[in-house]
Length: 121
Length: 107
Image 1 (tube, chains in turn cyan, red):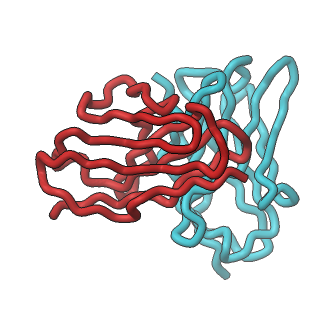
Image 2 (tube, each protein chain N blue to C red):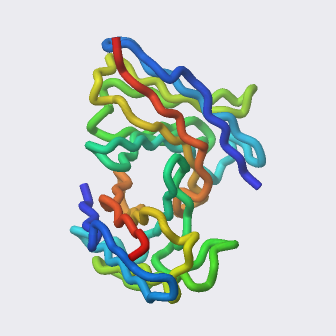
């Protein structure tokens, strides 16, 4: 059974960088068949897909246009985890952030527990 | 981006009722649609994938149908543990997009 365990600070100051980590058990971050995603949820935006990373002989990342200039998703194979960095945050980035997995061509089948993040001075 | 529109946005029903939620995509997404159930403070839980396939462990009272642009989630006999918010989501094209949710409560 795949399990995703999220960690990271719950409060970030405006203009700083939000950083979250998603630890994986029951699968490998460098699996050549799955992809690893970040999604956020807020009352104003609903559920919003942010981006994904995956390994297919080399690492790829794809991002939503709404955050493309500020987001980085990286994998750490040694720790079997992947991370989200969102720079220059504003209060509009306040949300619950989720990590998730997709199998090949499939749905978001396993999710992390969610990380509430507030952007506040 | 593909827009996903759910209806209704909220729904009150009684235990044992048949409940139907619809989802419409702004473009043809074939059957690349799933349905999630979300309870307060929890992550969304996958119920249905590929429009009509029941995820392992999900009760048989849940079913999904549709293809192209119009989809339906049906609960055949509502149970107390089904009280939650339901979301559809397309994975035909990036960015993945979600419906706005249908909040289901007890009448």
